[in-house]
Amino acid sequence: MSLSVLEYCEAMAELVRELCEKPAINGVNPRNRKSERFAARKDLPAFRLDGLLQPPGVEALEPYLFPAGDKANSIVYIATSGEYGVINVYVTLEDERGRQIESGFALRDQEEPDDWFYFPSAALRAGASITVRAIATDPLGGIGSRDTNVMV
Image (cartoon, rainbow, N blue to C red):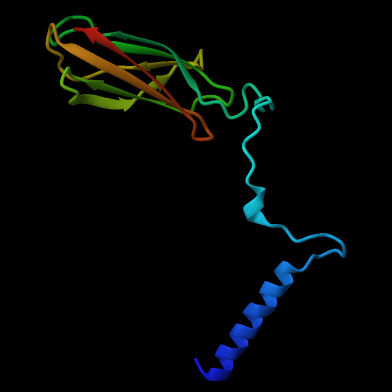
């Protein structure tokens, strides 16, 4: 920078500093932010409106899993709730070591919009311990989840 531009910047910075220190209204002292450190008040009740931006809930997670080769098909039933509805439910199946076996989106019941169904296609071993997790998402991006362990 040239000397004149540098002098101009310094002069403007000094002018801004002076304006910030002067009271905007005659008779009012400028704020001293360092002295405004107050402890949080504990006598004020927490402001909360039930239902306002509450995440969706997974009210029920009922997996019916059968081993590979069984005549019955596996199915996972999910019941959800949410003030703003639920736009999707994502389901994961993990083995006892935490490795993902399968995952995908559940299908919404046409007659009951809060009921969802997931149909696993992975071959499950008889006697295996499986963790089933359902993750519900609402239109505002809120997330609710539930998981359960079942034996095949």
